[in-house]
Length: 553
Image 1 (cartoon, one colour):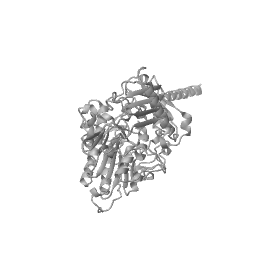
Image 2: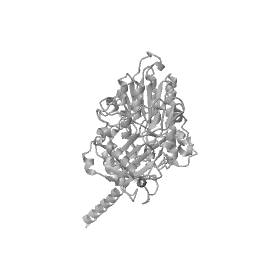
Image 3: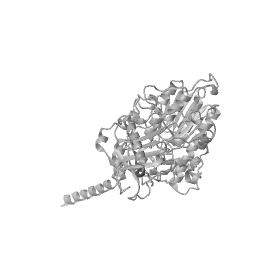
Image 4: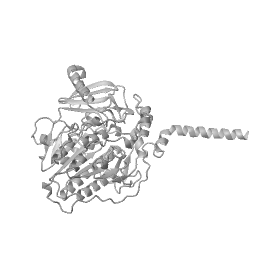
């Protein structure tokens, strides 16, 4: 009888533990060491790094050397996040230094990201080519994260579910092996062939294993974001904002860590808030290379999730009542401070006049952070091919060559940076492959009257888009739908005229098919399909009549 009671008690304990485990199964899975991101290597304490110094004296003054080139790339910055376009928190968070790049140079009023998601855009920036030409079509995603995504999405949108292809996931490469082919010629390689010192700071997302890393792709030195926290969660100088409605956020907090690595060395903690740390190191790199031409690719993580602000920036925005918006706006503030310090470093080293500086974002702002105005006035978000996903801040200054306060209205693309930078440095373009980018400088200066791009394309598996002569078509297989917009008269994509324009629809479909026929097969498969509302953030209740797309990663 006694043993029966003991066994009964054990069974009850097991049942209770089972119920608890099932209830909290996702939290347990996410917090198991390395199960999602598999970033389990130790991260050491902060340490000093030294950028390799150039010559103590320059062979010629800066104005007689090839121009220095600085690309500052934000991550998930919304079109409306800079005050030149309106500004975060109803314009109450000024970005004067980001805006100054446009005021001292050119504002590309219709600047487009290469894609509506980060990694393909970055591949296109660095190669000047549609990333689908070399199979970089889908965003590299850790396998564990992909497999758990539908579980977390369940219940977030009761009308539409996220799906994962488990068979494809089993056979796909590891996260670090999903990279940009070393057969591609990057702008770093093109500029290095002309004697430039090539420097990378920040995010990469184009592969982590040998052959894919920045120093394998033309960069002499690389300070790499190892994981993705801006500060440790419990740091006294950090303010966190967690979005409990967002499955992506649920992955990031328990799995990301605070770390960087230098020139493929061991990981260590930065000694400052990540945006400020990347800025400080970029300033040091500029000083070290002041006497020779250099290319600095500063790829900020900000304002990508996890949303973490420096406390001083957060406290400076006490007028913002919404906590998430205040944290996000504080991150924008730090990003503008970064641009301020970069521009000041160029000035202090006598390099400002003959340096080409470009500021842009890898794609539009994300709807999954729950802030409705970040891409205003455009519809859509990151992951969608509506203007909110691809129409991004895009500014350039080069006092020696670009007139101040210029505006350029024709569509331009991230791909154009490769060709523009190469032309500025007098570096030859590869002649063994198509280069899709265009040198923008003659267009900006009025020397070439034609538009740079009569046609632009975006491809995300079964979800594709084409912009031709002001008409934009999006086609999707899930849902099976077409959207046709006359952007010249409807720039915010309010009126779908697909049913009223059959001939134009057919012509644009033909352009899409012809473009698809020239692209390479994807280097790895899409394994997730996630619904994304076009007009609502993820924090808002979904309705059966809401328009949506499915994003194939």
